[in-house]
Image (cartoon, rainbow, N blue to C red; front, side, top):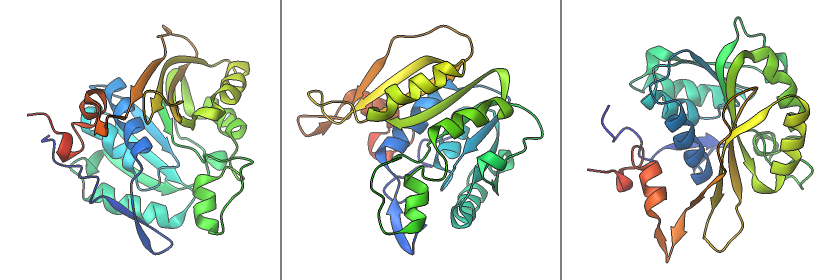
Length: 239
């Protein structure tokens, strides 16, 4: 597949009637998971798919079959449109569902999720945006509780979190028997604190050291950031 399918500056979604570009942190998470799943087969569930970005990114590097769910009807419509126009449409399907009510017909090999971020933070005025960004409906503890019913015993799942919530999440997931096998902390600048963390979890497996990704240095995107996004963003494409 050529590297020109994703053009993030043009990949927009509709929320509340306004076109919105995809978020950099979601793109980082999608590219990171896609690296981990390169060449893999099996079946993956994307929880809270939104526009379908994560599924589309992972589909580019893997041979997986994908099921995506989202609680928001508008997001499901958008994801369906994006899936149907992609080169991997025969491997992608999406349905409207709350993960807490999801009855999987079989256990998945992998689960990925970019869950609502701001539990206990002050929500905004737009109720649809609140549902997407705030976990007043789906808490992290509720998400963790759902995973065993969705995932094979030896399966893996990935989650994107704000950095300030990672310790809380790690305590919850450890008490449920999960280990963080790989972790990527994301920083805007080298001298700053991380603002996002990408986590890869499993019941067993080799635990790797935490890695870091710096997005910008001296007002330029870093080589590491360009390399990670090079297969998806035309401006970073590697010849």
